[in-house]
Length: 604
Ligand code: F6R
Image (cartoon, rainbow, N blue to C red):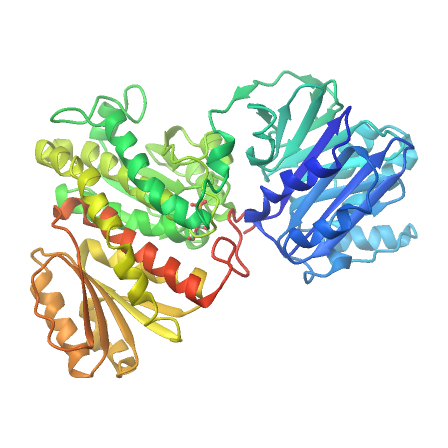
């Protein structure tokens, strides 16, 4: 969602602030703005709506600034208009905010009584006035900040500058991510590590209820009682090139191709000759996981689709029962927990608000343990969960998730093997299947020119259907989500057997029907479902390694390489990712930053 980046420096940071902010563009891009203090202690603000490049035009109106904060906004309260764009200002104070202030109406009323005039429709503006109000009372920024956030309800990561204290940035966080990075004669605040990677690898995370005061020289972290805290400084191994395009036209394309290396690395790290390496989920976890009788998976979007695949894997290979719930439902449901149930949440970002509140709820219920499968090491979800498994897929920049999905699947496949061991799953065979991913993935990438050609048949469509059965059904869901997200074509996914129970009514000669048909024990059934489509002259696109005759021009067969059934979900999603990508290219949409969506959904 919104992105925050701020620098306290000895040198001019005007351009640097802009370029760093661009690295956060993927989080949300309705509007953006910069506020910075120049040597004459004056505060200068620029704002623009639309993509961050629009802000570039205004950059030259800024003088040299040495302390500054910047923001990319993903609108929640108030339309993406200039008046709602951050930074928000009040007197000598300018603030940027990520999160949601639930009691902003009450605070507005309070501020109006104090003769403050509010000019935006946002919940964030109240923070600027509140800090100004408190600062004027006590003339102490630390106290003013603590006093102000004490009345805020909701979630926030806040960056503040005060032109009376021209070399300082203040920050506060609760329920929204904020890191403090330490550089040479420069220190930074940021929503994530990506804008600072050119300057430093060292950072600390600001926890809930923690505050920071930064200058170019020092970083001071303190709590609500003004007690100075000693925080662990982390060194990230993420490199700047991981958040750069490296010759690809889009991050989505780069990330689709990164899947080969990521999966190969995961295999080398966790898979032995004939079995998995011991305790890959942490010390003592093989024993702990062998006692699990039930698993409750909770996640959102693509991560939820990964959990559906895992449910299928585990139930196929053991007597363990699994449920998979979307987090936005789980947190409002009555949950029945049998003994020896493990809670597993899956999240690329580790900051998805719905998943975080589900995890918090789970921790209060009677689970044996909580496990997080996550891509971001220092995230709220990894901090909250008892057990953590890091996917290590590297930063995913494109809003549409690709490499996170397959690395979640790989992690969940390892998890499925471990929990199913005691139930006699054929680990040796499964391991040998996993080892084939590397080879098969190359043949899949070779399909790109063919997929590109096919994509033109989707370009002018408004609706599509995606079908799968068994382990391929979640792939149909995920493929449909990808197409919807980036090409804005409506796509619905069904179990192929469900077609005749309703959706078949939609099929006519214009309707494209995409089907994932690996050659397994379900293939014959899927083929008869497809015959129902063909009988209605539907246009079918079949991803399959089964030899099936191409009866007419309305049947498009995308010949997939042979592949063990176990790894079908990991491999069959890749051509679907490429298909969405090429359809979106043809439709000239903003592939990496689709409209209305944000990378990390930090509001409920
Ligand atoms: C789709 C997509 C979203 C996320 C969902 C959960 O391409 O990226 O559906 O999967 O918002 O996000 P994480 O995994 O970060 O919790």
